[in-house]
Image 1 (cartoon, rainbow, N blue to C red):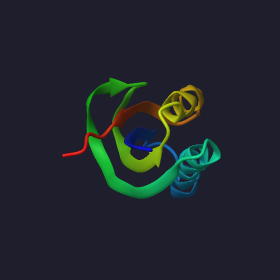
Image 2: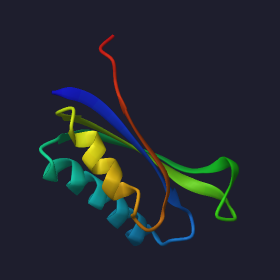
Image 3: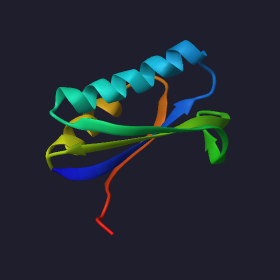
Image 4: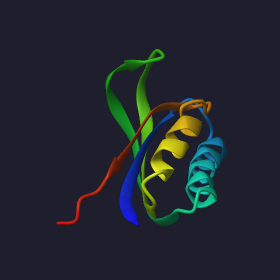
Length: 96
């Protein structure tokens, strides 16, 4: 099992319940493919470096999880088509 971090940038134009549903769906995807969510870090609303879909701000979430090496590819293919997700990035965390 490897340690991964999934960064999800969610639209600021949606309600709190919808935003929570997007993050719950991401966590469910991790568990669906055999991963285990260890931590969800919410950074809140931040200013974007550049406009995305005419938005200057968005909510940032970092989902830490343990999974096999095939899981990030499966998760990214499904997060890519999710509504209200502006950007995402899944990276492997190195052991320090």
